[in-house]
Length: 236
Ligand SMILES: *Cc1c(COP(=O)(O)O)cnc(C)c1O
Image (tube, rainbow, N blue to C red; front, top):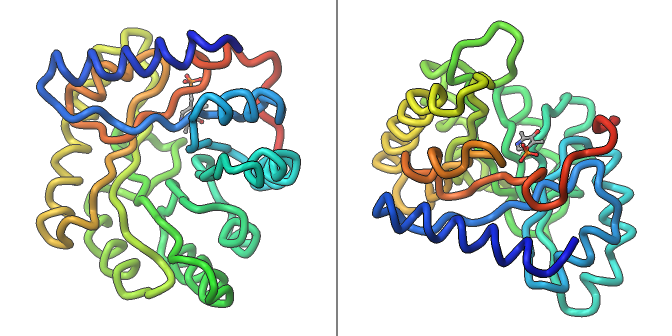
């Protein structure tokens, strides 16, 4: 991965934000299936936030990049894949952020395991919303967001930061815009209720980040555009 790719993506984020009169979002580099060298290369260029879909894969990568982190390039790990409750203990140890909290049981499990590590800051969590009401998708229903937010806010070991969505992957990214707009409405309602600590709307990937930014994304999750096409599917 060459130096200009990260620079290029950051420039595209700035441009999309400028064009839509929005703030420039944070870049989450989605490193699933990429090896630790790719992560280390990006970290050396100043990228700090990395997204992984699977607990086991992240565990190996976090260990393999410990030297990079120790050299002063502190890395921040985000879980962006579905989390099974029986992996909550590992997730609460390994990650700084979990984007995929979508049920009360997970809130309780993550809080309990994070609370058992009192030396660490609270775990940052986003509520994943099934914004297109897809039967096959994870995420809570929009109507369940308020109750889930209250449950998270009641846990001192968790920090409610906002909302994450993955719209239906229509071939034409423009078709995803209404889902981004609905996500922004949900996010704004949470921010009104819980205040400035709710600051993160995670939406937009390689092929639709400009649209997501125009509709208010504060964090975009980008893999392919940074690292190239994934050679193999992510394995759990
Ligand atoms: C893989 C993945 C991404 C990155 O997708 P690209 O199209 O490669 O940018 C973003 N979000 C989630 C939840 C993912 O699983």
